[in-house]
Image (cartoon, rainbow, N blue to C red; front, side):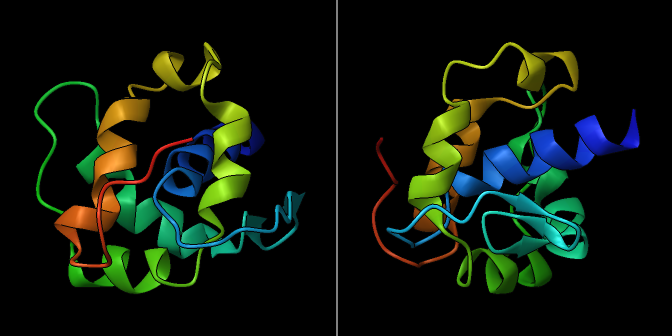
Length: 103
């Protein structure tokens, strides 16, 4: 169950990261985002009542591979954990890392 949570959080952040080469999932995180980075961004990508991204979230997002997160665009798994992919795609702009990311 924890692996799915990590995957979902990372998937959301994937849509937000500034990368072009998919890196996939490994023991440290997803799409170049660490578990801590994904956890930091989770409140900002919640399906209901998302909060502004934290400094820790934006820092993690700046190192993420956004293109990799596009693999989760139509995943139903994200919604099971309250993650809104569209909110996640807006994080780069909210973190002043450029425009919202589009897959």
